[in-house]
Length: 477
Ligand SMILES: Cc1cc2nc3c(=O)[nH]c(=O)nc-3n(C[C@H](O)[C@H](O)[C@H](O)COP(=O)(O)OP(=O)(O)OC[C@H]3O[C@@H](n4cnc5c(N)ncnc54)[C@H](O)[C@@H]3O)c2cc1C
Image (tube, rainbow, N blue to C red; front, side):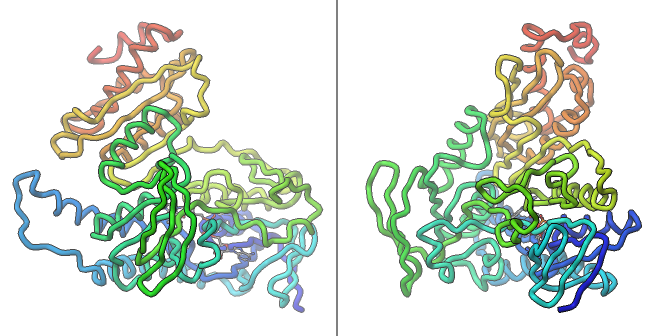
């Protein structure tokens, strides 16, 4: 077995690993990037990018299907499944190829192919061919789909997000298992592209919301378009010639039996931590095999080991993986003098229609005795009506003491933009009054945000310790 001695070994060449490598090199140390799978990252290959390409095609189909509402008659149109999927793949491949090219252009001594496992506190064994002794190690191994029973025993017959973009044509019918962000984005897109889709979940959840009012509105909106089997129990999944026969019990206790051409399992993701032999590090692990981890330093306990990206289970999103990769790379070189980094305001968006956004503190994390909630319904919002997209609710949370914006949950037309504005003002700890001084054009969806902020300001004036003169200086008040 060959032995390599390096400054920092990085396990995984996804977004977190690539950013860690760059930070290590920038700090003047020698990185080694170890990868067991293909280069190209989960985001570009099977995650963010191909899913948004599918959603983009579905948006076009939906606009055409909906054109009659605007008095525009489209007499002949169809979804050309193979051609549409070909575009998804060819655009996806451009993103992937760019990452693969830049990863392959790294110096050969910075790359190693194989599955890494811990053989000691700072020693890795890679596929039995190389032993790597490192001063520090960054774990950036990402996450994988959870495949619950009864689908775990028929893995070769079902689809996960890794497979779906490689379909040659759209199926006639599909069961989507899971109603989280990935299930809703992909399932709604497929339905709008003409696939008969039924969603299954044992829970009552739709997306990531915790605010009861936003949850209520989300159920209203999505159940009017999608076939949702909430609180259902999957009893059996049997592969047959025509597809997969699902036997399930609905929320009223009634049993059903239905064949779907394809089944997409999108029931959440789990961190790729189990097959790293972490017990060989001597670290204390909890009952799920996880070590103590600090989100500000990305350090594991007080060891020269750092965890970045989906693997740490903190916030499994692309921009968080990038940030954590950079923090982990820098601290792996600084060790033992690691630095704490201020993290960005949490921001999550789902590209459903209407879109979903969550910013800062979620409703479930709030102390309701110390906050006020401003809200706007998009049901009658000017620009939303103009676009024929007048559905949704935004709820924004403000602290009574600080009078600043601390978080929001929303579903509504193109709220990806409102979520960004709110994330920026939240991170700047802007008071509601200060946010209301910012310009807003007419007629735009952002006027809806201003309505919610005005509602919040009114409530804070009554209950908050805000300086009332602040509100008086806001133009238009
Ligand atoms: C369908 C879908 C849609 C998504 N959409 C979005 C979105 O719109 N916006 C967003 O922000 N996020 C989105 N995400 C999440 C985003 O893709 C992830 O947060 C991000 O890719 C995580 O990057 P990472 O570096 O942690 O992991 P990865 O990119 O998965 O990298 C981990 C790497 O480690 C390698 N590896 C694992 N174990 C070992 C080992 N023992 N030895 C060597 N190598 C190993 C793997 O092969 C892999 O290459 C989506 C995810 C999915 C699945």
